[in-house]
Amino acid sequence: MRAFNKVVAAAALSVAGVGLVQADSHGPDKLFVSVTSEDVQTQGFAMILATQGMQQGQEPRVLLCGPGAEMATEDYEADALDPAGANPQQMMRSLIGEGVQVDVCAIFLPNTDYTEDDLIEGVGVAEAPEVAEYMADPSVRYFSN
Image (cartoon, rainbow, N blue to C red; front, side):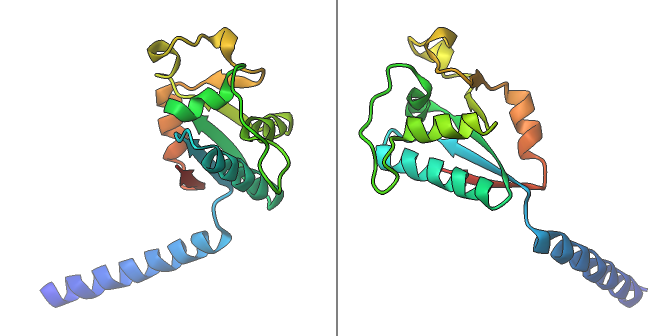
């Protein structure tokens, strides 16, 4: 009986594996970019990857937290990065202009001197339950720094 159970289990796993391979061959449709770094090049590269993902048919979403969330404030300053010719916030504004959802994490504002009025237009405040639900979606690919 144990041998039979092993054969049935192996068959079930192989069928499930085929389904996983088929689902994975399509690849995720969504790209979740989380930025926590204060480093301008790291922030810029995250925005470049989000833009590239969008251009390749993915649906990017950006979450900014910690020092990375300062990129969403009106007083953010950074030099333009080559070869983009824009700073990370300018790149992020372009993404927002394309309809990309950009949020600061739920704990950023209550733990800093910033308020919602300090955020640039188009940036929202994430709600942890909604972000957790989004992250559980198997069609989401992650990039975090």
